[in-house]
Length: 342
View 1 (cartoon, rainbow, N blue to C red):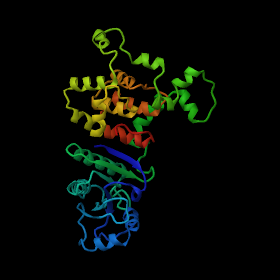
View 2: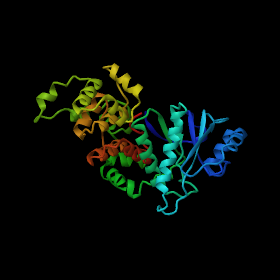
View 3: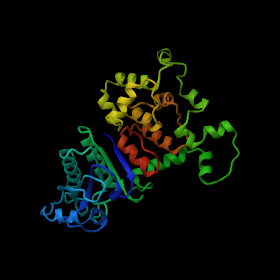
View 4: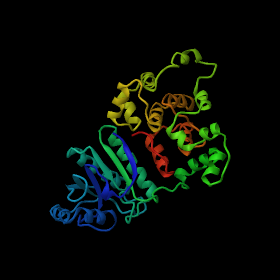
């Protein structure tokens, strides 16, 4: 099951369990804690009064009451004291114990806020990193949809060290036509040029002929072998690449951040046409180079261009040999792009 980044009000997220960034008393407070208590109603406070509080790094579960969820899982994150007071270990424990409680109570979906990243002062980018690492480790062995809910955009600074090189790569490679379009300038394009460089078309429609041609095997090494697969569908190529990689189906769809049900649908339909972000998720899981990535994406009916920030970000990670789908999605989320995978 996937890890999903989402900008939303956590009190309105529909899922089996919502995690509350609580204090040790569990009696409500400010920020997320206060918002959840207000949304859940007085019944939540009455149940919390019976729990005897909660230690930092631990978690306890209650009913969801007036919230659109079955359960509320209360966990107490660490106060940031500079990083030398076991903060990271305690924060990881918050996520891990909350996930374990959700699993024990039969939850198939859970939504987290960024624990400790508010008034407790944990640096937001470090808080995101701990959350993603801990959740992804859990998902390696468990099936659950996990949402990381971010309110607003302040958790991701695209000029920071973490994303600065991505921003620079976008700036270096973003087409002049696309840059001009974002600035609101008017340009006269002929129809084929406009289609070729339309960001919307790049995400949602079939590739221009020039892009399709660029994705085809060029004369040279392995040409005869690759020509045998010219008429493959997306599904046929995907299944062949999985076999060639030595991965199991489960390893592949988990590494791609893809839901098992969606993978089963793709496997059972040789003519299946996935979304572009789904095709790219499999390319990342299979650790394909740019040439093979373009080929797989073209089988799904799409192209990759430098008129699309989404495409450039994917290219950046592939060119740098980073095939971690969660890190890629962090970057996509930071730059307001759709995520790959589910």
